[in-house]
Every structure is written in C-alpha cells, then in structure tokens.
Image (cartoon, rainbow, N blue to C red; front, top):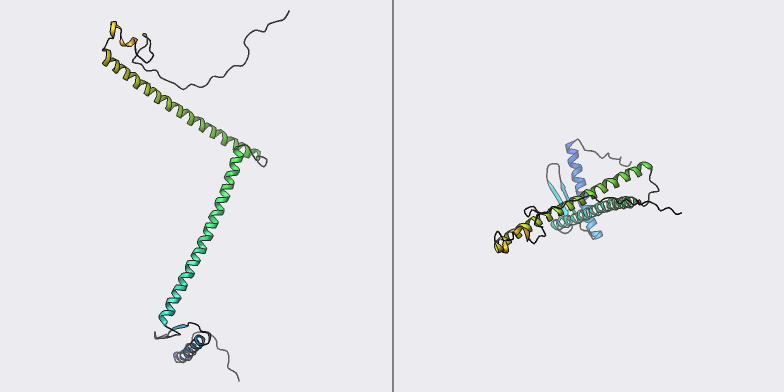
Length: 221
C-alpha cells in the first residue's frame, strides 16, 4: 500500500512538527550537497528552526555565496532601474514629439496654411488670436518708439543745457558786440525762440493719403 498524499500546511502537533523538520532538513541539505557536486554549482542553504536555531550548508564558503548573491541582486536592480529610466525617457520623447507636431500645425495655420479641415468656429478663433497678436505687436512697437522719443528729448535737453553752460564760460552773459547768447546758440534756435525750452519730439499716427483727384476735369469742345 502506497503512502498517502500529505497536505502542505502547518503541523499543529509540536512533536510531529519537530520530527518532520529534522527529516526534511537533512534531506534538503543532502540534496544541496549533491547538486553542488554533480552540477558544479555554488550552493548555499540557510535554515532557521522555529526555535531560532541555525542550520546552513555552502558548497564553497557561505561568505562568498552571500557576497555573490548581493552582487548579482545589485546588478539586477541597476538593470531594472536603467530599463525603467529608458522607458520613462521614451515616453517623455513621445510626448515632446506630439507637442512639437501640434505647435508646428498651429504655426502653419496662423500663417494661413492647411486651413481646409477647420470649421467656421475654428477659423473665427484663429482670427481672434491673430488680432490679439497684432494688437500686442503694435502696442509693443508704440512703446519702443515712445521710449526712444523720450530718450532723444532727454538727450536734447542735456545738449541744450551744455551749450548754455559752455557759452557762459566762453563769452559770459553777453557776447562780443553786445549780442546776447540767445541769438547765437549752436542748437539752431532763432533770436525769437526761447533757448530754455528744449525741442520735444512726439509720436504721431501716420495720415492716410487721399488718392482721389480734387482738380476739376477739363471738358473738350
């Protein structure tokens, strides 16, 4: 009569559990030793009993087996991290390529190209974006021109003041032959102009040219 199949579960009886542990422990260590000899494998087995007692076997040295195990696990961990990092950057690259494609498509549409697939609502939205962009460009241009005019006015006032001081140093309050400094300043002012008021530049909007002919037509007899 053959042996019945043993259910793999914890043995409740402590005596039976200890007997089973001893038998299977010896069998496991024996199998490990045979595996190392027959297959030229480096084998290490560590067993702790329920009471905390240690049983071990190593085909060469337990220290060398443990060190080799740690080294291999670290290499596997690094390889897994590298693989995960490569997959992460691949996903990032795919997202960036998609964003670049969307930006290129949007740029072409703003340049008036590839508008066939757009609806009236999309075209209206694109038109609003272009108008807002144009207003922003004009505002920035006007601001730059105003800043340049302000800077030129400041430079003109500074040059005017330096001319006054230079004239006072050379000729005094009145020049030769009794001519006042107001009449011979080098900034182009006439005698009647006030030398203390610098010329101010202003930004004016360009006037539209009227192309219509205002002269009367000549009638032929």
